[in-house]
Image (cartoon, rainbow, N blue to C red):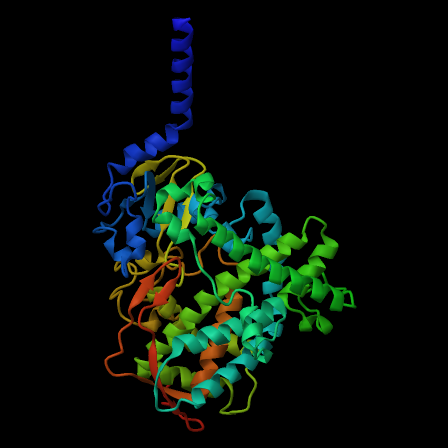
Length: 506
């Protein structure tokens, strides 16, 4: 009998070691790598609660990788573009790390967290919505709400303004109209405002990261926080589901262009993203009501903070770099023929190369998503080391986009880096990744760029942006998205007709 138990224990040990073989290999690798000092139990999770966590990752050496611990789970931080290309540019490593699973209650099962076949199916179905003439519909919404924003700023001329709240509000209104078909500007009562979806959100994922024992799902589900998390999720989903059913009932006409013919025009231009998805559901039975609710939630939550923060930071940088502000204004005057009443079309937005350079440089310095994470599906050689399958990878746009050997003078605002005629600085395609890159890049990056361009160009057409004394330094706080600590302050002055430097050198 004793021999039987020895055999069972031995066999069990071999099985456990086999199951943990890649974890053990990753731990062995982690002890060979440099990285920030880890605390007992929580590892490096505490760095997420500092204002500058990415600067605390340890002294970076070119062509190396670093370690980062979440409790007893080792991550490998990949910094060099050639290594990032092996991870993000390959379909071998499409699966995201367990970190994204923590956002499932917050985001739902949308494109951000979905894996494998479901992700492929949804991506293929939704992608055409953000291509070609479809974006023209959204451009009209951007223009309408950009004008509302100028009215808000016009009431505060010559005052020191923290622009973050006003821009957050207008981006929320744009997202609500574009995605859900909701005109939130018509909502006046506090009761109605309280019922708005995604207006006030708590992100519980960071709470769990700082308490690694809560990474175990059954432990987390026993907590009061989990109940609050679930209640928030059900509240968001319930409101979107109600809007979905109301929209279905109000839709009397079937659209004939579900194949998304790029040249088609007409009544389909009046559709929101939600209505497009309803059409998808009617054609593809595997696309359900729950899929629509989850994807709408993902687009609302993933788009709001990233677009609003990036827009506010770009305005702030233009206020503090007057020469680039005036170059952008000269470009606008040239494209719009100095016509203050001219409608800014999608075509005009795409022609705004100087403004695009400024937005890109803003996103280089302050990418709204500071961390991307993947799980390796097979062994990969990164930074001169064999990183085992199953290892969780961190990629930080905030770190990679400030590598001096790719971006000389990396902490300075230099939009000319993105001038297509500038042969002095050729940017590695994986050195600049504010929207991610590869098969799982941001599906709505064209939408986001047009939205930011419309908001910024409309503001520049109407106002001169001035810096605010003693508030001319960006202080960022990293959570799961980038936040401006202390706000972003600008003074607005009326811009006279045709006012600009008239020396556009973009």
